[in-house]
Length: 76
Image 1: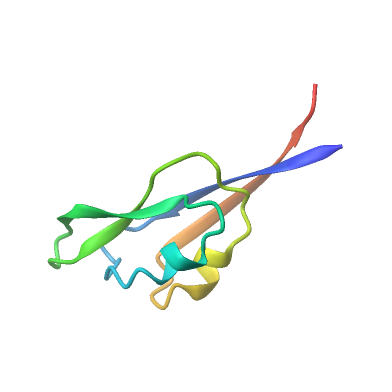
Image 2: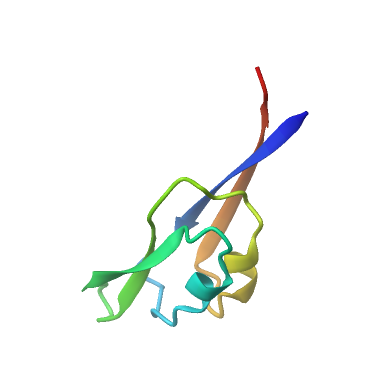
């Protein structure tokens, strides 16, 4: 049976640091940085590889800065 592996990409320059994506992630893949982007906001980053591609973070992001990728991984 194929398993789905996900990955996310965050546009850090457009992220306003609202943290809504962090609360929506069931696998704690996203966290906030202590650094700030060009607009002066703390931004979200990917902190582990546990993403399943559920898209919760991208759906709730009010600025649409998260892109989710999904790929089927076959068990060997």
